[in-house]
Image (cartoon, rainbow, N blue to C red; front, side, top):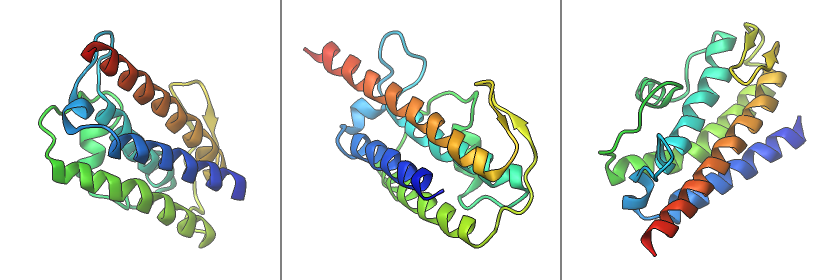
Length: 156
C-alpha cells in the first residue's frame, strides 16, 4: 500500500498547488461549460475521501460534518466561500492524508461495507477504497486543471 499512499500524497500536493496558486475569485468562478468550480472540486475530494474510508468502515469522520454535507456528491458549489475556509481546506488536504495513513497502519479500518461507486467500481475493502479514491481525486484534479485553463482563456 505504500505506493498508493505515495500516489495519494502526490495528488493532494497537486490539488494544494492549484488551490494556493489560483486567485480567490478564480477558485469560485464557474467556467462556461461546467457546473461547479475549482474550489468545489478540491473540497469534494476531501469530503469523498472521508465517506469512502471512514463512513463505509463504520468509523467517525476525521473532519467536521460541514465539509461532508457541503461538498459531497450531488451538492452545488458555494459561491460565498471566505478566505479562511480556503485556508482550512489547505490544511485538510494535507492532514486528512496523514491521518488516513496513520489510521490504516493502526488497523482502524477492520470492517468495511461493500459499495459500488457511480464510476462502476466495486469496493470490498479499505484497500480497494484507497486505490479507488486516488483515481477519484485524480479525476477531480483533471477537472480543476481544465477549469483553470478555461478561466485563463476567458480572461484573455
